[in-house]
Length: 404
Ligand code: NIG
Ligand code: FE
Image (cartoon, rainbow, N blue to C red; front, side, top):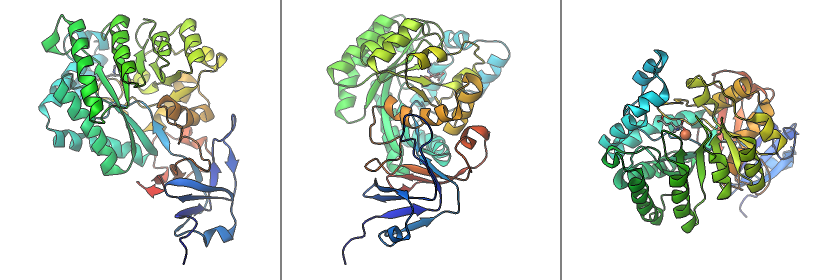
């Protein structure tokens, strides 16, 4: 007997393919079939299709949409910063805490103390929570190690999360996140060291992209540029924590390197937005950090729309500014704080998030794309941004395999 045409088929749900410039791309009474991890059929249901599949998943309603892509996380870390959260509520600012040696550096101390297995054990539940709420691809940054061995440890843990959970992982080297104490007063020297570690980590297959924190409490545009030149020499794409707390021209700097994305961008000017539009740099909106820091300066949303810059939405899952473990919740915050429409939010957490990672094989449901999809217990896609919390993801599939 010949092998079945499909490894699996899902029937009985409505599809929201997002495979159109506008609209959800709804297909009612649909079937979605996959083979070898890719989508092999998508369209009206016909019972004859079922006999061509090795496995039939029958749903009683609900919506199948592309798997969510969390394109900006720092989910590999140890410890927590709940005490810092309390300090901020008592009036201390994020910058003041950072300058006093807390903030990112307190997580660096915890990560350096943790062994690789312990770091994995602490990080896995966060990855599982994101997957349980619909994520099929996670970007994970380093940046709490700040020396060769500990940056390597973080990136290895990120890869191991992918192996353990079956979720797609993209790793980002963010050694230029904060200045470690051993380089106090010598940020240029630290950047030189971090540039020297990069090819070694890349040679181990640990780096998919390079990022930096370009900010008064982070690194200067000149230091960021230096790091980006090192990335370019290795053909690695860049992305940037840009213009979060002040406008240092970070968005334009990232665009100048054909950056995949400029992230946060609350303070980005119209020139920055124009540069992003020209170079195809995606805006990654991080409403979780905006919310937790109780920011008031909105990203330049109207300018991004006017210039046609794709807007992705991500959790920024991190222990300091965004201890957020649900991308669907980030989509909800993007609607309430940034007034994205639910459709923009869903596209931002799928299609445009995939663009922000340079991935062309996911983010929409289409024949030939990866079979990354979620069956949601909802009637219409806008519900994904409507409910706060709850348990909506009924089945989460990556490459046709159920991962939650
Ligand atoms: O994206 N801004 C720098 N990086 C993170 C925060 C990291 C932290 O505070 O631990 C961010 O918000
Ligand atoms: Fe971040």
